[in-house]
Length: 275
Image 1 (cartoon, rainbow, N blue to C red):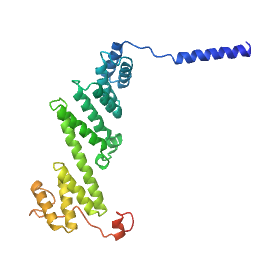
Image 2 (tube, rainbow, N blue to C red; image 1 turned 180 degrees about the vertical axis):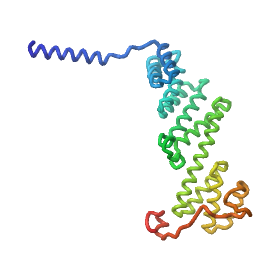
Image 3 (spheres, one colour; image 1 turned 135 degrees about the horizontal axis):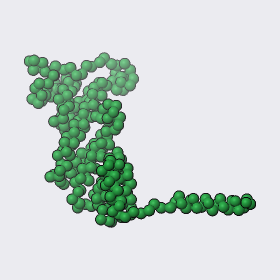
Image 4 (cartoon, one colour; image 1 turned 60 degrees about the horizontal axis):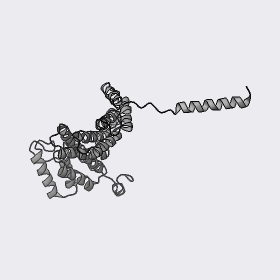
């Protein structure tokens, strides 16, 4: 075989292989995609479910299974830990089906996805404190759950959404108190007092409310604001009469804050310089 013939044969073979490689997948009937997706979801194979649901949306965007496929896609992405994708799918479903009887479910899953976006594997398995980091997506989840309760107060998902909203508020309060503790370590008592007061005013039922009141009282005492300190102590006694801040005679004992002797340079630079 001459070199010209050989190269021509190889070129034809390469073109044939390229054509085979680029041959589009066979388009299945709409019902087959839907049945494949449902079967995959029942068996826990959410990657396969998502593949079939995406195909169903691509080839039959206005078919008989379109709305249910869009709804299932939210759940499949959530189960695949594609939480941003789940939120995007929920937004698309609500945009295309604003009057759907399943809109409450889409809003709920959108909120659940945001709720879990701030809970990483590091937090779950390595004990990283979720209250020590920004809770931007928690706030978004709170808005989603609030929308659910406002629009669909009788939804079957309302009770769980309400409990998650309480949990989010508690996390927000704990984040504020975490900041207050940080400022205490830096002897930035005005900033610490502001954070603690924010907790008392905005999250009075949070588990950290008692500690927030104690920080308010002690920082007021350090700042020599006696009247404000007594108001905080009275509020603490009214709401938490069994607080460890009181001795057996119900006298307030400051114990959370131990001021250190530090140089002026250390104080004004929040401990970055000086002793």
